[in-house]
Image: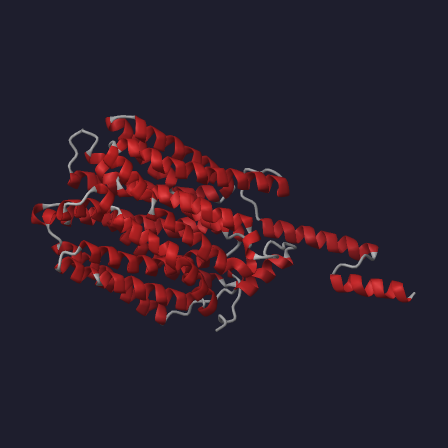
Length: 460
């Protein structure tokens, strides 16, 4: 089934663009809330089920493993049925997984929570393929990173709302050793998913097709989508960078509560959950601050700088004691803020007919969150929590290498620039100038004109 005929984001009217942008941005709150609760459930389940830190990371394995397993299928779905129907599929799976939390809590089965989390992960994976890609192409490539950072800022708001709710309802009084509140919270999550699905059913969401995107970059003289998909190196290496970064980010978040408690400065689990919420607030502030910066600074260059800062502060967290390490982890959350959306927009930039397929591959990189927390949890069990932060540092270093490589590649093609540039418009102006010169000199422009000229010469 072919996707509906569509247009490009740059061709939408202002009102139509704003409506589509606001509606799709509302989705980012859903998986931000689910992700924020996930990290806190780690510590809560350690208490309720009496499991180790390593065993508790099975939730991360299920959640992010779903991305690795399901993302290729999600990319195919969105490519065949379009963005809107893809969003319906994602919200349906998200709500179904949240409903499964009720019997898991009722019968106190940790395996049930792990399975339900996998279903939620499949739903959110589908939403990410559709929503991230849609926001990226909903306008010019120049400001794609800024748009996605703004939308994902609302994911950050939901991410710190999750731990705040947990600190109030999961870790106080009799709730500290029970699962009663967990089932009610996730029933509300399911209700939110159903409500959003209802809204999207009646929404008029403009469809942006790959053919229209391909025509847009071809008109600018770019042929980045020519050749097989595996030769789209910016996207392929973007998958590697996203795998490493998300793995590092998830590992840091999954053991953040344990980290605060183990610092030996009198922090209990409830207080640690609140501090984790403040870390998420710092992360969210970083997202909205970066929206302004990305309007002026090249995304690849800014990602290189933020990646270096993430690596440095993660190293300091692993080495400094007490409040020094706590301060560094707050700085780490701030510099994490732009990494995911920048990797996504840079990796899917100018993919043309491969836009949705590339989106699926980059989202598949979220699967890195399935094994990094387990590696960090194993090291934390062998040594202590603070030293285990050497594991996520390796992910930040890999991401930084990718960003620096993009800066070098761009400098070779277009010259080095600190400022954010509109490459499509620049290429269109250059192509127009070349065509005007050819017409003035009588030189054929298109392949058809060149062939006709050669045929005339042969006849003569």
